[in-house]
Every structure is written in structure tokens, then in C-alpha cells.
Image (cartoon, rainbow, N blue to C red; front, side):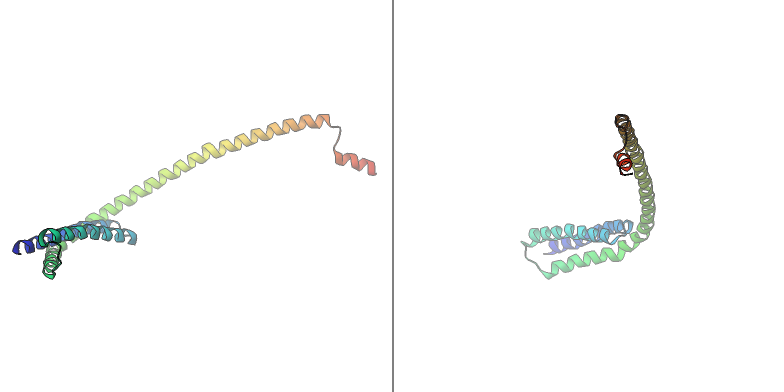
Length: 161
């Protein structure tokens, strides 16, 4: 019993450290969806860890004392190390946010240049092809005009007068 309580206490400290790591990413990615996904990831990792510990040390039976030990370990980490690392994490996270922001701006410029290049190559070449087709139609139309004596409208106009 004493050994399993120590294990759950250490597991609480470990889960506190895991939450501290995930908090760093939460500080880097501030959007609500990112925070939700990171919290979901934490609980996705924490749940199997707790389940495996319960299976291995207590044959799967749930007792309040184990969750109390887990909570005490987590709380001890939060009160001590978590507060100290928070000071450093905020500064480092803001630095990473600035780097990510600059990278996204440069990526946006690259994508815009690719879009302009695509437009210049394909759209302008399409216009050139259309103008060539139009000039060929005009040449064909001129050949037809030479064979035709006059327009039908002109013919009818002369007859009615």
C-alpha cells in the first residue's frame, strides 16, 4: 500500500510536469482551438497513465486514496516548480510567437509570389492564345467577305427602296 501511494504521488508530479510542458505550447499557440486541442491531448495522455497505474497496483479497483495521492503530487508540482518555470516559459513563448509570426509572413509572401507567377504564365498566355484565335477567325472571315458581294442587310435595303 505504501509503495503504491508513492507511485501515485510521483505520477501526480509527472502529470504536473507534463501539464507544464503542454502549458508552454498553450502560451505559444494562444488560439482557443489550439488550447482546446492541447488540453484534450493532456487528458488523452493522463487517462491511460492513471488507468494503467490502477490496474498494475490495485487490480483496477478505484480508491479515493490513490486519487488523493495523485492530486497531492500534482498540486505539489504546481505550487513549486510550475510557478518558477512559468516566468521563463512566458518569455520564451513570446519569442517563439514572434518567430512563428515572421515565418508565416514570409510564407504568405512566397505564396503570393507563386500566385502572381501562375497568373502571369497561364492567364496571360491564355489571353495571347485567344488573341491568336481571334486573328485567325478574322482572316477566315475576310476570305468569306471577298466571296460575298454584299451584306444581306444592304441587299434588302436596296430592294425596298
